[in-house]
Length: 266
Ligand code: MG
Image (tube, rainbow, N blue to C red; front, side, top):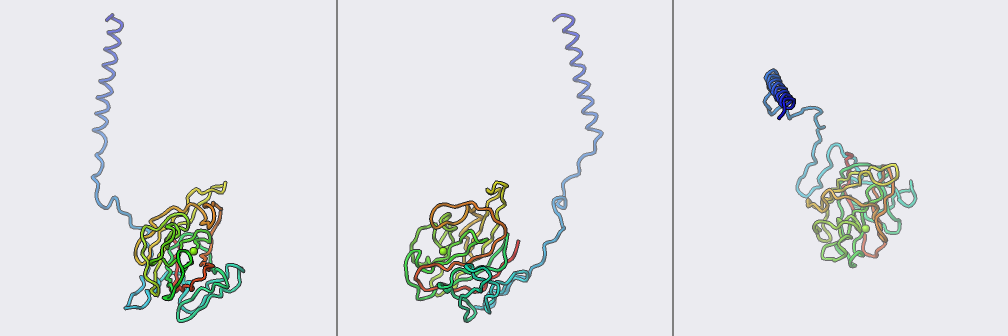
């Protein structure tokens, strides 16, 4: 090593040592961070609103929670209209605290439009139901008027799995078959998140849905791929808030009934 290089190396070593001393001196000057306590990861405001849960007494219906919008309480179809003639009355038959599909008059829809929601709806396949596959108690709930959650009598009735009760129709089959037999009431609880669209009309965030039938999960935060088409594949159609549509299916089997329908906007 020549003199020039030796000098350079000594200088660099001295400089490095000065930096280390200086860094360790600085560390000593800083206060030690406070030790983590439980309260540091807790926040207290805003508090969630208090919602009174519905009561359950014997065989009585579970009453809606205090903040629900009532869509059918056994009295009339005033929250609904014809889907065929917008603004026209919903002409399905109300009787004995329930209403029954009138296949002659077509689909009905809520007058109110919704974005994200929790829906509770009960439905019953008549005890004397006939027919097979898709022709047996077929109806459905179209979320935002676009995406059908299938209703069908799947109690001892085989059909294509992505058309079963609780399927996102022609897209995703239910995780299980949780049907009660004809004559008994089935309960759907549906939690839906509406899509967000990009400027080009495609999904920025796809819609998602969780479907629970009689307390059993059928869809677990499932992504909806697009509209639920009878023929063809899902389409992506930009839309805003939309109604719930109940399907009047053209099959010749005995019509199903609904009761106790309420919704909570999320
Ligand atoms: Mg259907």
